[in-house]
Length: 339
Ligand SMILES: Cc1ncc(COP(=O)(O)O)c(C=O)c1O
Image 1 (tube, rainbow, N blue to C red):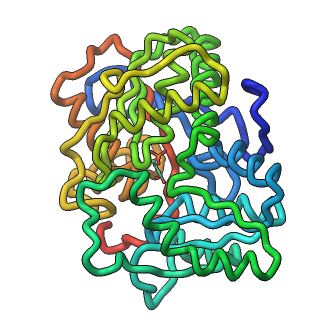
Image 2 (cartoon, helix red, strand yellow):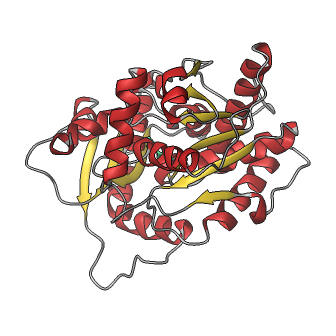
């Protein structure tokens, strides 16, 4: 499906499957649970970013770029997905990863290396307060960190294209408007009315695209993003703004208010990428009931939130809840001691 005439390069295996989770539904005794398998988008071990990158990489190519630069944590899924997409399109991936270089490369970082990405590790400069900054401020800071290398690459004749952390741009969010069209079509074909979509929210781009898609289709679905400890403030406003900018890219006459953005907080634990006990339990439960792997940074925490909400009676038995599996499985290899 081509949407809104936005340039797109096919990178993902779509549609991703919509599967029922009958054993998990029975174990929890709650609503009917489904999983939308965006971990199976395919390229470079898949995940949600591949949908965004179909549009972001098309924009990079259109602008003549041959090098893409991005930022993330040492175990960033997005950096790994961008590395794979860049290689698929004959481009050079350059990564700036927040943290110290580990002695051993594992999980996503190992995959980055195998994709031949140029990897730089960086620390937040002393004195810079990260608590309470918003995503746009974080991006400015990261661009400053990369500036020296970008000008070197450009003086060597390379054309650089910077992709924000999480590939969170209005063009990228088009991928998740598209995902809603795909999901609603699948549900209609099977005679299912989806009531909720629950997923991990990080940079907010996935949620922005879905909130917009649901509103544009008047689909009557509540999109529930689970905060996994991204340290950005004003996420509801940021997501609404991103959704509205995406609407402009698509020429859609709908707008999203921050009050229409639902974020569940309280499942982060000690912080981003630090697994909670409930997250590890959720990963084990879903693996044992459905043969499905989640990750300890994003989807495990989102599933822990969903399980808790079911136990708290937030849904009725008649409702249909789709868990969006956003990928991230390679990260499990970086957390063996938790299992
Ligand atoms: C596995 C996984 N799930 C969810 C997210 C959050 O997606 P978004 O950044 O679009 O909010 C990410 C990326 O940060 C991710 O890697």
